[in-house]
Image (cartoon, rainbow, N blue to C red):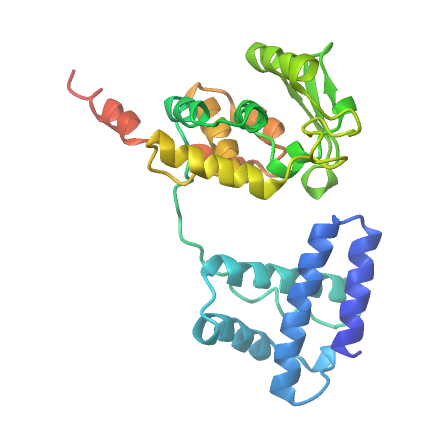
Length: 291
């Protein structure tokens, strides 16, 4: 079977199992890049059954040595290939999953960038736009992804039950995130006294934005500007506020399983990256000796 045809079948398969549009688009883009590489190398169309493990290893070296891709990018292509060959093997397009024996890309272990509670306060205090200020506080107190925040509808915020309903978050999974008392009061005040978007179903919207939610670039730029004004010498983004939410919960001894459910992680191993420690905690640990 031509690789181009197999890629089309792969796309149809991803759609049939309800992978998110974003995931489908990423896999399709990656497989197009891989197919172009193999076709240039073969000087013509490529059949899936003719592709060897050596070809794919050469592709991975090409990403590193010629394209200069970072480990995270190369790892993404590797997992796209792994997903494609699992599908191809399952559908008998290939007799053997040649990716199964390949080594994964080793990723550098990096500490996640996050803000302390004090730094969050400093940054939020420097946000002049009221709505963005509310969004920043919301992100820090819920751990929602910015896409989940921007997609939040009026009906998803239940003040009576004190919960936020995340509908079709990452990987199209629903979850419920409770509001703490402070956030509940803040959102009630915003909704009753400040929200100026009667024509929009989105919770965070303005009359100026029309039916759409607040723009992502506008939120990011406002956060970055506020961080610089606050004197916090860290990169501050919407996702950093999500990291900060998780890190604050870990510091307060909240269990990883609870944090996993709040963040919407499918794998507890992903949540465990937030168990980082800071210098203050390490100093306290070593000072417990010889007391």
